[in-house]
Amino acid sequence: MKKLVSVLLCLMLTAAMVTGCGSSDAGSGTGGKSTKETKETGEEKTADPEEYQVVMVVKQSDSWFDDMATGVEQLKKDTGLNVSVQVPETGDAASQISIMEDLIAQGVDAICVVPNDPEALVPTIEKARESGIVVVTHEAPGIAGDVDLDVEAFVNEEFGKLFGEKLATAMGGKGQYAGFVGGLTMETHMAWYKAAVAYIEENYPDMECVSKEPYEDGNSIDGAHDKTLEILKAYPDIKGFFDCSAQGGGICETLQEKNKTDDIKVVSLALPSMSATYLEDGSMAAGLAWRPADAGYATCYAAYLLASGQKVETGTDLKITGYEEVEVKDGVAYGNAPLEFSADNINDYNF
Image (tube, rainbow, N blue to C red):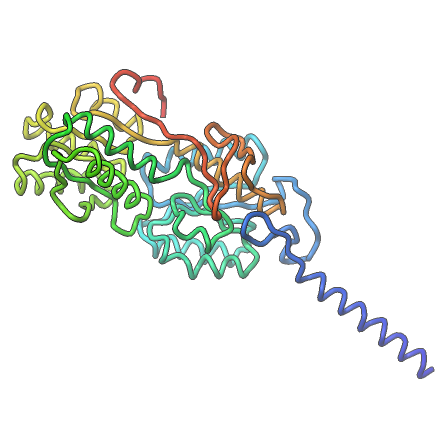
């Protein structure tokens, strides 16, 4: 009898050890954990998109992120993926962190986020990943080492050069200029700004940036408008502006009020729906962008791939224009999706 009890105890101990080892098994995509097993039951999922919950946390409520939401909704229609968008009450890191904390508590499979302040989100990102949640960012290559993947529409430095090229051409390569970002903590805005200024300094010695740091417009048309008024007072001879936060319309409105649209050139990150009037009347020389809807689609699809134990690597197709064959380097998946707008082609776009 004692021998039988000993055998049974041994079998039970062996089973427990096997179960324990099984629970620590983690697959990987690019740089992260897999959530292929459900957190509640341990039952293995398939790769069926309907079995995965992915949530995109955008920066704020505006036309840019409204368009991103249309792409996320299209992904849901195309694949059946349980994907949605959450919008913070205010455009700051604290509001995004609050949403992410709720999503961690819910145990979603993947969180996608466009950070207002990437570094501020890192502790919450780490908490999510420790809970087995895949985290994929957009517009945050500087924290690629802290997430499962960052998805970008292009190499940011190359896109930044386009601001410099377009502004220099519009200004005839001469005169004072200023650059705007949404905020100094916004990584991609700062990367574009620095690349634009560096390009101009290298190629156009007769152009002068009036400030050592970019001006902040707070991701607001009104902010860009009011800041432009201040700059015009301080630098009455200024000849150009570029805006990295899609608020160039605010600059254009100020120039219209001051009857300076013929004298001062504007280049801005811009949605066609927000910039068409300015491009057509000549108050904006050029607009630059990528399609927010496509970026949202690609980012959330990448998150699904990783959450389902698949990989995102060089050559992976994220199933949307500009991201059909991404290049993955140092935790960042780069698409090839820049767009350039002018008065001649602005009506070719409907977003």
